[in-house]
Image (cartoon, rainbow, N blue to C red):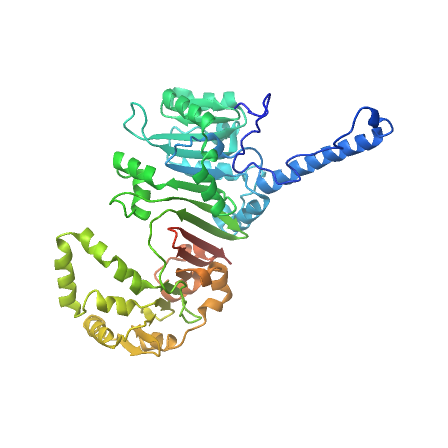
Amino acid sequence: MTNPSIGSDEPAPARFGTELPAPYASVSVLPGTTPTARRGRGLLVAGAAASGVALVAAGAWVAQGLLGGGSRADEHLPGTAAVAVLVDLDPSAGQKLGAVQFAHRFAATDRLDWGATGHDPRQWLYEHLTDRATDAPAWSEIDAWLGKRAGLAELPPSGSDTQPVTVVALQVTDVDRATTSLTRGGRAFVAVDGDWVLVSDTQAHADAALRTTTSAPLSASPDFRADLLAIGEPGVADLWVDGPRVSRLAATVPGGLAGGLSGVLPAATAGAGTVAGHGAVALRFDGATLELAGSFRGLGPDARPSTPHAAVLAPADAAVAVSIAGLGEQVDRSWPTALERLGSRGSSVVTQLQTQTGLQLPGDLVTLLGSQFTLTLSPADGRPNLAIRVVTPADPSGPLDRLTAALAAVVPTVQSHRTSDGYVLALTEQASAALADSGGLSTTPAFVAAVPHAGQADAVAYVDIPLLVQGYGKGMSEADKAAIAPLGSLGMSSSRDDGGGSTFTVRLTTR
């Protein structure tokens, strides 16, 4: 790709993921030195030049270790992408170390290591992705040209196309070998972009993707850059999504990646079926902990609940805990929209629920869900030790009595009691007693490692995997237990802001 800075006064545009921090970005040696002033300064100039070269070399070495080498896939994918997936098997030194630490906890991946012959993560990933493809080339052929970075973009139809176009960008070490391998037997079509190749289903699509990438790569998109900046350090895999473009793709071809994303991303208030906003998700490592971090913007005007942070009112020995702030308020706000989406069935569904449960909807439900809602599952001998603890500003007595009566017809052991700020509802006396106070789960080391930002979250979920297996895994085989034995806890936290933004983090710890 042409560098605009060569033969031009215009600086080259910055590409996301390749900027070097000062002092590595440039080196200035003795500004203002003139030919007449150079006499007697030769050694000084030479020494300064040598220092500059050393500094540049040191910067390159640091950048290689901390940032990884070469350009990223977003520099070689079209900026028109609706969905982009970036894979980086040459991440920062910290990511590499964390990935190895995590992988070595498990028997299936305990030999993976960067740079180790026969233990290459690229080979492990390739063989697992192609284990059912009978016509896939052998790894020895792929290894001869495949680099360590790749990307995939799903593009909206353009021109005479009526279907979305998928483009894959591959970093290669040998363009000729890569082209020969990829195009053999009409397997794919390739366009060359320096030490990368763009692969698509037709030569026209590959060439068009290259033209777009040359003039407007994904890395130059302001939304893309801001979204990746919002999630912090890039991971070994990153996902970027543009909601409105995904909506158009899903409308063209229901199902698939775009259709799946349109079903899980928040819907825009401007129109049903339209996915709002845009955002990014990073899959990365924090030591031996696997982390999924996401940030989305422009999701809509929904405000945060008046109780902004979830209080984890769970006992220290809880195997599972889910806490949500302002759940009652959220239900109250969304109730009219929910009825509207149900259409003609809405009123009959509500009437049926009220008849079966005795609850007055939505009022009783808003009161029962309250401003702080925590569900817990604690260890038990052969039966679910399930309970909920709710803080609610309204008097829950009437709604709680009606709910308890409805549940008792199905679960005779259910019991409830009032607390100073709400109520407890539990399936067993043991669970009810455990939730009588605020509990201590949020201060345990396992919880803190899995949900480090729980104090700032609107919603929190936590699973102590060994404790869950111990209490409820009697039906599991010994092989299954051994496979998950290295796992510690799974934690999730999420929050919304008044500006239509949302962030979340999922962490899987190991022992």
